[in-house]
Image (tube, rainbow, N blue to C red; front, side):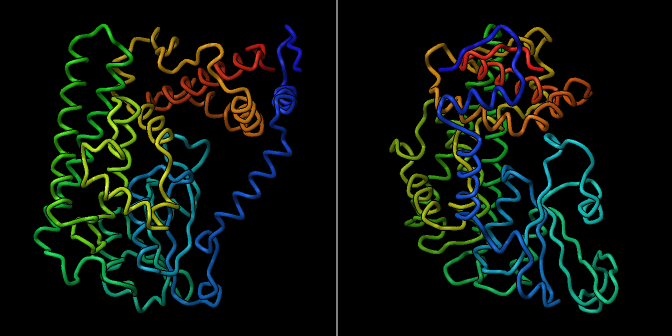
Length: 390
């Protein structure tokens, strides 16, 4: 039993309290080891060919697997069976401290995805943007579209676009439709969060409903396209670049509609073509390994809108909306203990991010930091821990 004192607790005391509730630091370390063993991949370390000095690819992507464009690129590499390695860097919204200087060398703005192609300097071709490194050079390709073109045209492996059964003109139409899904998903998320933060504003409520209709209407177009092909993919049984382009957006749309609007895209029967497509995508090991769970998608999306924060008065930031709160008795003690143990272990980063938010002029970073502190206080409250931490 945990005895709560009126004296503020230190981080080690919070860790001990979490252990008393059933989730110790040793248990966390053990679970992390099992996770690392299960998800270990040669992609995060140089391959044998790379060690031998052969040409290789290095993909810069976001640290936590949240970036949809990085997802598209890495899925393409995996489905091609290309040898590559991954270097990771935090997205700018969550970055604490300086950008990795090697990433800056490849992508001056620190943006991902970025692909580094290491080869003999004379093999890169005229006009390639490259950095000389002794007898070798890096060719740098930035952005999901340009990287996808390079992978499909320059890398060995199965063709995923120019192959029998794929109408290239129709593929272009579908790729444009993927961008429409992206746009309506972003609009729906922005409108839904703004409406939740200020429920008394009728204009925001109308905008949210209109955004819902646009996204649902576009999903109906996607559903029709898949059904007309015979499914489960956009070109029937042929998996292609088109499916990879839709992969992060349909996943996110399903998550947002389920959590925010109670529309079940995965199993509800309203979108049978999309439902079959999602099942077929999740049956592919690469996509299954790269995708995030629905709740994570929703939490990230809901905290990522600069303009949303701009709409909100300062007092609202100090008192987050009720939908972020946990009622007394609703929190699973073991889940709270696990979260507390993880936060105690990562407290330096938590404090750095929150302090950065306090002093940042970037509204997005302020919003993320304040939201993080609020959720942390909710967690401590559920464990009976005093809310002032030394």
